[in-house]
Length: 251
Ligand SMILES: [Zn+2]
Image (cartoon, rainbow, N blue to C red):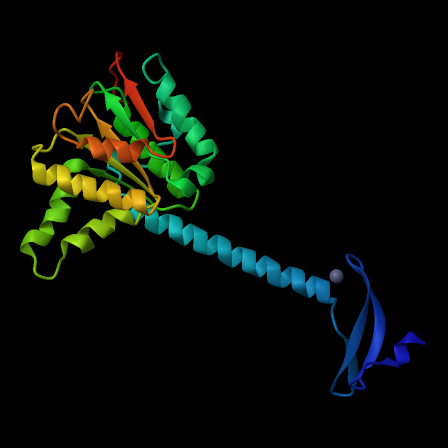
């Protein structure tokens, strides 16, 4: 009888049938003169996997919360999604691009596909940038939004603080997988600003991170706010340059 079989260690083995996994060998474990068969190893394995998945999902959710707290998204644009962007004559082309970007997000982030969004004031560019950050964070990736002016202020903080370094300040902006730099053209447009901006974009390029520049200007290079080499970096790896015009709207 199978009930009397033994393993190498002399433990009794019983054949037991699991409703889910079928027959298995159970080592009978003795406890206080009673013999107890072991539970199905596959069921135990499933339980461990389930627990592991639960922990992974918890970690992911904690990461999303942290990324959201650090995203820099203005309150007005918090939790905005791609469906919040009005699809009209002006936005259609950009929306299509960004939609596609999100569809193949992992692939895009892997190689750091970057781009620029230029055009008239009030065409929804900031909303688009913020919704991209939100959507990307919701999928468990780090993403940040900042204006060019604030970015430069934060990097320049190293000029006057002995405990900060320029490289360290720049590194803060190289870390996120996706970075939106809005309001290009609102800063003063000095050589130092263009340089700092280039260092951020170039550092991100080298780390294959995605960057989205947003500007109300049609051509930030011609207007002296961005170096041509900065734009070249954004164009690598299938980078996009989108222009919005016409219908002004606020949402
Ligand atoms: Zn089982």
